[in-house]
Length: 326
Ligand code: TYM
Image (tube, rainbow, N blue to C red; front, side, top):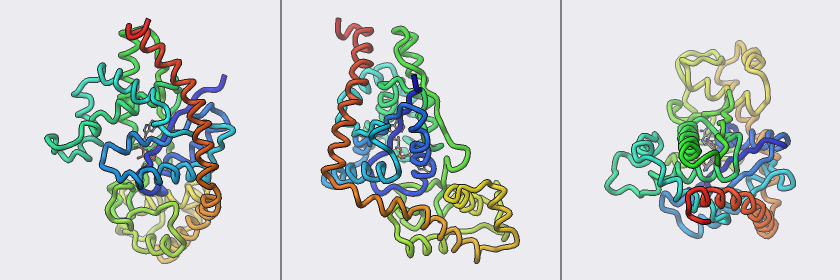
């Protein structure tokens, strides 16, 4: 039996190269060796206000991105979270064994809530419980994510262990899969912050749909640190970030990258980096237009059927252990 993978992304805004290098690239690589489920987590998106028409469109667009990136519906189950009602149902159950203190400690809640607990939506607080439900419903072994999701995954493990302790072995305890390089791609304008979909300034992110001109301009504007050498150096976060992007899109080793740019400066490095990213995204950008709505909708429908069959078994087990059903 193959081990199982679950992961997902929110259909909120456009995906950027951080999402691709931190998560999607690994999802594609792992689908050969694992039994994989990849979800479009639309119920997570509504923790912040969304325009309904945009959310609908973004959901289909994200499915297109998954397919164009190389997720293969004949090998992986690709589906939309809200098509499988067990996610929301299990989230309620798990919220009853999750502690308020645990949720209040989540750094993403603290960042997004900005300390304004009087007015912030409760969904923003309970979001990690829904995420735990996503993962645990499928008896997941491995969850490939970027660094920013690590804390949510630790909470998921704690919740699963607590449930197993109180009600008997029910959930498999998932491990995170966080890549060594690319787990936290930084903003091009501020290398102390991660590249983020919610960043107001689009120049900090390279979006997967950016054209060649835009990509070149954004890299030219990218901030740099003091010093001129093009090397990996923890004390110089800007060049570290740019060189990591170069390394991942060219599939070179770190040493090969450093040797390649020895004696060269930013004047040569930045256009070469832009070219490498443009070439990396080209096949993806060509493919992404080829999946029409009907085709995508059919794939998602089939995916949801398969996902529901697995999720129903877990939820039934949970309910029966808790005395909800006989
Ligand atoms: P989301 O939609 O914010 O991001 C999707 C994936 O991209 C990764 N990522 C990054 N990786 C590297 N550098 C960055 N700058 C960067 N920004 C984002 C994220 O870590 C993520 O892997 N809560 C999740 C979605 C989710 C989920 C799940 C994931 C819901 N349920 C269950 C795994 C399992 C999120 O908001 O991801």
